[in-house]
Image (cartoon, rainbow, N blue to C red; front, side, top):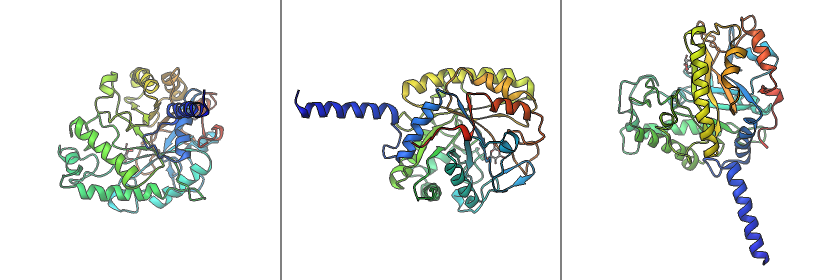
Length: 368
Ligand code: BMA
């Protein structure tokens, strides 16, 4: 065999390996972003990372205290995954729809990255035809932002503002911080302007593709992994009905909450198990990662929820992370993680001590 042929075969071998391990939506993703993708996959075979929305920004009875987190106050460690919300950034405002200063958010995101944690971002952007993200009476909002639509230029401006923020997330050496971006989520429900009754599947897919292309190509951002996160679906077919495509999605997520307090526990367990069965299979087939992108039981009415419900629901599946929603400091009983004195604290500590559950300190290097 001549040397050229051997080299060519070796080249193809390397390419195949690289393809199966680190194919990301953005082929030009930074090496840290590609490493994050590979490590999400790896960690999902070892256990599950715990995540919390707005963890280090505020909690029950406090806001903006440096180094504070309800989760850390209860169990001594930060969550492995931190969620952040950009609603109202598109309007050029200094504060989010949840009254969080975007500069403070940027500082916290950097701190999480510096400590080795993982950052994920959602975006409840306003309805371009007027009103909030939940203003969903109109069925033309998605169409209006697509090329040729009356709000297309406005939407580009919103994406420019989004890109400016995402591109400003850099470490101490000026390198971009990898972000798991989760746009237009819960779109199989009908409560956002990009929801199932508000646009056609084709329009939704066009919105997704336009956004991905704009961020990666037009704005040249290469620190993003994209999460698809519909609400609970009974079947795989239903789950993928408005799927933008394997070349458009890195992570297969799903948002499932336990409603109705204790009486909703069985339904919740059944739903998580059912969805994770087909999401796990699909993730393997498509070279993706599975996550429980949003979950929780509002105000934690069950003291043993963490070990008796949540752990039961997720065991046996490969889920890179699960993320519970925020502990609002300005809304009564709108919390999903315990805080000191909350009734589920002891159970949460037991959950944290499970060898398959990762909080921040036990994380391997997620960016190498
Ligand atoms: C919702 C609630 C709202 C919040 C929104 C965006 O589920 O927590 O209070 O404004 O998420 O973070």
